[in-house]
Amino acid sequence: MPMQAEDIETMIREAIPDAEVTITDLAGDGDHYAAHVVSESFRGQSRVNQHKAVYAALGGRMGGVLHALQLTTAVPTS
Amino acid sequence: MTDATHERIEKTVKDNDVVLFMKGTPLFPQCGFSSRAIAILDRLGVAYDSVDVLQDMEVRQGIKTYSDWPTIPQLYVKGEFIGGSDIMMEMFEAGELETLMDEKQVAKAEAE
Image (cartoon, rainbow over all chains, first blue to last red; front, side, top):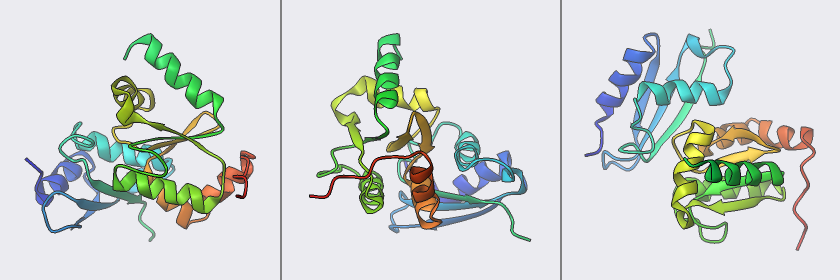
């Protein structure tokens, strides 16, 4: 079963409490999402490590049930 | 992952300046993310090699352990894991990928 957008958002927020999470359903099929995650905790981290933190929050689902999640990460600008 | 698979992946990563582990081939990518990664490398005009993980289940699983990264494609430059297609796109749009290739003195693709 594909994941619901709210479930993805909840899992990321639980692991990264200050995260601003924006989920976009790319294809309207509940299976292809884009996630944009903004968190102060990313500051000073490489992009690879920022993405790894989100993947860790998703508990191994990335690449499995979440085979088509486009991910972008950022630190807050202000 | 067996030691033999790990060694095989490591040799591939070390022996090639730029290598993309992908689904399918540059001419016939088998997923949108791999297709996007190839498009970026072509735009950069660098010489690269690719490994089709669909042809080798051990590499397909092993590369995820090797990099501690759950998805494919995966880009390596001079032995260093750079990221997947999302990171490639972010870096490409920011001009960082071109800078990285220059700094690492990666060869350009030969004009045909």
